[in-house]
Amino acid sequence: MKITMVDVFQINNPENPNWKPILCRIYTDEGIYGDGEAAMAYGIGSTGAFGMVQDLSRLIIGMDPLDNEVIWNKLYKQTFWGQNGGCVFTAGMSAIDLALWDIRGKFFGVPVYKLLGGKRQDDLRTYASQLQFGWQPSMKAAYTTEDYVKYAQKAVAEGYDCIKIDFFTYKEDGTSYNDIDRTTLLSPERLNTIAGRVEAVRNAIGPNVDLIIENHSFLDAQSSVQLGRAIEKYNIFYYEEPNTPDPVTAKYISSSLNFPIASGERIYTRWQYAKYFENASLQVIQPDLGTCGGITEVKKIADMAYTYDVAVQVHACGSPICTAAALQIECVIPNFVIHEHHIVNLCDFNKMLCKYDYQPVNGKFKVPELPGLGNELSDFVINGEKVTIKGDKLFWSM
Image (tube, rainbow, N blue to C red; front, side, top):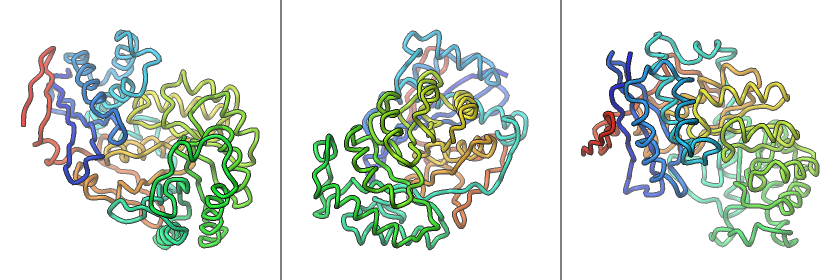
């Protein structure tokens, strides 16, 4: 079996211009195809990922798609910029790798988890993620303490026994906190406002619902420790991305606080993770299958983490392709802790990208049983604008 062609898509939805998923489909000479994603749909950089998937796709035409390790190492070692490459590079690798695993599963007629060693559990514990944007099929903003409480109670009423909120996103007046507001030591007023929100949510959801604190790396080491100490008494499940990912400052933060520290959506490949394992600065890692190097790489990282007693929660803020892929690997690894269900997975602008709409029930997620990843791109994507790679040539179509 040989790879014959790759289609690469950048989705531009005028109704949501801040969401630009980068998707791909790899075709073979046996009629089997696989779908993947470079999970940089938000923030700045999706255009770079779009180009990177195209560049890397040229290198795999004619190769056997079952040789995922051979292909992964070719992309990493024979491209110059692959080694210690940044997010755009590893996101491009990830999209290709996910599609290759999708092909592998379809070729052997089994879900990917079978090829990874077998399913250890089926009902995966799941948390409602990013409630500062509400918890409904659209993105809204939580401005007031009452907003945070309302959205938290809504998710819990749906059966989730764990939620995640960035309490430092919006001010009471509806404007956003900026980097100056969240850097260096915090003023008592600012600190008390955020801690008060955490306290209100904890009181509203009770002691039997876990609470994850999201920081999005906006704080620095000083302010994250300051905030962490102010909210420790509210039984925090873990404290996510407290500052810019760095193993030295991560060690300082984890040594200063009495709850687990999590990070990983901006840490790429096993080489970057190794430093965090060696100094025991992270208790939960959150690699993203769409940016960290795909299933081939994340399985290695998860196995490394297991030897250091570090838990794994795959970061999942992408299309339903990444959701399906996350479930395939999370059900296999022994150090899985919980699955992330981001609010984007409730929104039509994201659901429309794939054929199947998998959603958890009562805070539990079933693993897709279809061959491959268990989902595939919708006609909306396949029939839209794309770039096709055949050998060294590009073909635009609309």
